[in-house]
Length: 372
Ligand SMILES: [Zn+2]
Image 1 (cartoon, helix red, strand yellow):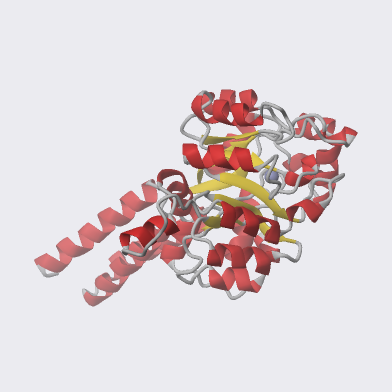
Image 2 (spheres, protein in one colour):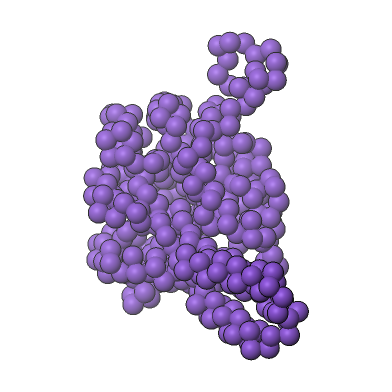
């Protein structure tokens, strides 16, 4: 074999091996395939067959896990006993047809599930619905301090989000404590659990203002919910259009992409607002609408969709199994990397897009005191 070609193959092989050990299966597969093509040119039959075995192993190892180290934007460290104790969540386990044996028993089970699915990190969150009128929703689903404790135990695996019931008198102070003291990276809301519209100017707006000031994203439920005893009129997508218009620099993630029939409306929000994102957790990829699957590959949505499961309601490995069998699925490598990992990093590391700043930079006359 000529020296430069041999060197080239060795280099590709080395890169494929390091991609494999970093669990970038997608890259490993592509690189091994490149090596096969070059080996064929050199008539190295044994090299070709060794390389093909490597590809088979990559495919086998990654059959029910993420093709790149993923970040799950929506997971709950909730276990068998917690789910049984909560009436609303017991109903959710029925809704999701969860069999007892797949429900994790401990944080160790959860970490093992993450490892098996090649999920490097997960966003975990509390839910404060203490002011709920409904007896079944009064008890918080994990407190802010419990989430902070778990993040401090596993800082490389978890990203914490706080939650505050907007009807609490100290809602803004607690939001500030979540971010400044507990070091959470964002806030989570479930408007239906607290019977408050997300565009409620008195109750929600001061919290959003604080989140803009601290530059942290807000994630909020949008569309149907598996949480029983709630009314979903509080979570239809157009309510969030008000929020995005009134807070143009708030990074807003619509949880569950308006599942249950509102996905087109939720998608139109992500389309028109530079800082609105869609979380695709809460349902198996098997029921993703075709418009969502197809648009992910376009420049309008590629950077706007965040992978999430809603673990333990949707298992991480079963999500990836279903994801790989999606009909008409042809996401580019770039789209997969963004949706499964990079969009989540970008959400937490970037400054929001500021439409008024863009106009000012372009020399458009914007009143100096204009905020939106
Ligand atoms: Zn959830």
